[in-house]
Image (cartoon, rainbow, N blue to C red; front, side, top):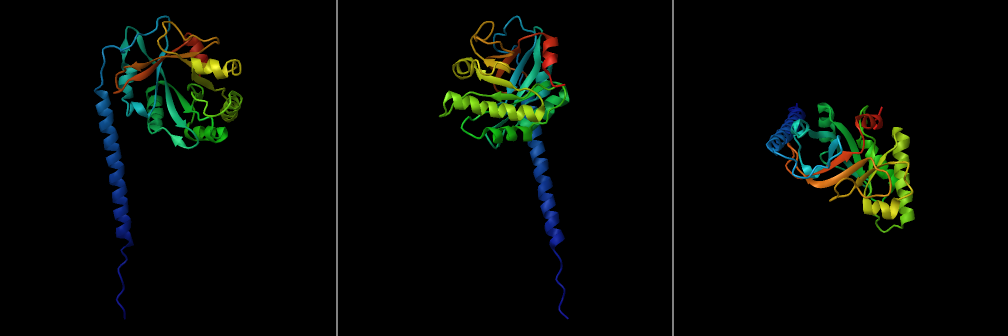
Length: 256
């Protein structure tokens, strides 16, 4: 009788499981180390002039800020100014996900920071597929900011086609979430290509080196006033924003 061969499949499976476990532990340990490193970032001031006349301040972040110690962000306060909200990059184009989005989205929620998620728009790509990329990643909750479309480039499109593409993304996201999105753009780009066509949408205006507000012909809701701020818990510089209104107006625009 032939000798039976030992089944070594369980050994292979065990080795595979061990390798997977080591990978997960290593990844979590590395993430923990990066967060501890970020927690050492401490600043006496925000490092930029803070516009007066605004009571609600925020920042926007992406993978370029690396791993963030969100406790440090939340607890920093200078002369009554603290971070009240955060816009977080979720996606760009048809397939890309920001490498830090899931962690940033989860951590800000855990700490009770008001959060919003934005998509960087490529006009020459399929707008509906881009919207689906964003929607596949972002799960909104009560108290979140509305969805955000970041429009900064025209590509090789005419202004008319650009606007048509933007409208497709906005419609797809609004139909899916039931919430009208916010449009983010720098003031010059908006005035040149979008002014007069999207007045029904909230506007997040980027305009630096201005003393009191963005110089734009339309009403605005958020103002990105500086790109070189400093916040505890973040190793690199970060964009600073303000909300154009009081706490009641801010609460009213959050997802119900």
